[in-house]
Length: 287
Length: 235
Image (cartoon, rainbow over the protein chains, first blue to last red):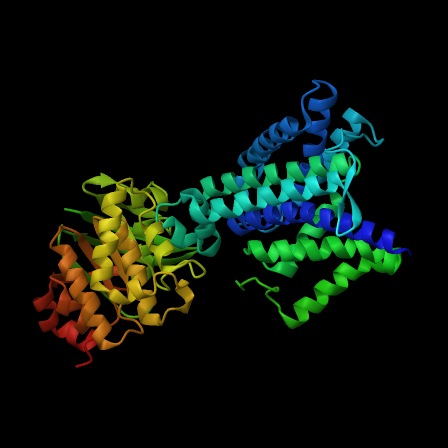
C-alpha cells in the first residue's frame, strides 16, 4: 500500500462518487414525485453507455455529442416506460416494484443478446494526466467530475428557479398541495422520469468511458444510489452530493486500505449506523 | 351562479361519506357549510376541488360541469381550495409558496401586484418571505395557505376550518380579508366547526348531517333556528 496507490484510489473513488450522485438524484426525483422505486434505473445508466457506444463506434460521432444524444434518447425511453408501464400503477406499492425488477432482467438480457456478454469500451474522455497538489491525476477522471458537477448544478438551478422545477419540488413536498395549485402530478412524474433517466444515461456513458461497458454495469450504481438516498435523505440535493462523494471515496479507498471484504460491507454498515442515529438521513426530512 | 353542487355522493370503499349534498355559491357570496365532526364537510370540499372522486352528482362552475376533470384542471377554471392541514410546501420559502399559488397564471405583472397586495394585508408574510414555510407559526401558516390560494385568483374559494388554531385577532384579520375579496366577485364556501363565527361572516349557510344537506337558509335565519341553536351553537 503505497501513497501513490492510495492517491489513485482516492481520485478514482471521488470520480465514482459523482457517478453515484447522478444515479441517486434521479432515483430520489422519481421516488419523490411518483413514489415508485425504479429498480431498473441502473439499466438506464447501462443503456446510456451502450447508446454512446453505438453512436461513437458505428456512426463515428464525437464522444461528447454522443453523450448528449444518449441523454435525450434514454430520457425519452424512461418517459416511455413511465407512460407505458408505471403511470397506471401510481399510488400502488407492489406492482411498480415487480415491473421495475422485471425490467432490470429484460434490459440486461436484451443488451446481452444484442452486444454480447463481453466488455466493450468507449473512447477516452481525455488523454493523459496533470498534476494536482504535486500528485498525478488522469484527466478523464477530472472530466467525469466536471461533467457530473455541471449536470448537478444545472438540475439544482432548474429545481430552484424554473417554474417546472419548482412544481416538481412542490409535488415532492405535498402532492395534494401541488394539485391544488394546478400542477399536473402525472406530467411531473413524466418529467421526473425523463430527467432522471437522462442523468443516469450520462453517468453510464461517463462510467463506460472511464471504466468499462458491460450489461451488468448498472447494478452496483443502483445499490449505491439507494444507499445514498438513505444516507443523504430524500429530497436534498446537497445531502445527495455529500453522501455520493462519501460513498465513492469509501468504494475507492476501502478495498486498498481495508481489503475487499470490508469494502463490500462497509457502506451498508455506515448506512445502518446513520439510520440508528438519524432515521430521516443526514439532511433529509421525514415523511 | 359561481358554484353549484347537486346531490353529491362520495364513497370511501364501501362507506358513503357524502350522500346527497347540494348547495350553491353565488358570485361575491360567503356561504357557510356547518356540521359536526364526521358529517362529511371536509370530504365535500375535497370532492369539489377534485381530491376525491364523486360516485354520483354534479358540480357546475359558472354553469359548466367540472366533476369529470382532475383536480389540477379545476384550479385553472377557478376553484381554489385551502384544505384541512393546509398542504403547504414545508421546505420551500414563503415567497416560493406564494409563487406556486400563481403557477397557472401568465400575467406576471398582475401576479406581482397581487402578492404585494396580500403582503400589505398580512405584513408578517413579507417579513418572513425568505423563511421556509414549516418555520412559521400555525396562524402564519394558515395565512400563507389562504394567500397562496388567493394568488391563483379563484372564482370560488373553498376554506376548510380556517379558524382552527388561530388567535381571535388573526381570525378577525382573515375574516376581514375574505370579506374584502368577495367584493371583487369571489365566492367563498366556508367549512367551520365554529358555527357562530361562520354564520357571523357569511350571508347564507347549509347544515350537513351524516353527508346530507338537511337545512339551508340565510345566516340570520340559521342563527335563529332552534335546530341550529341546539345542535351547533351550544344553547
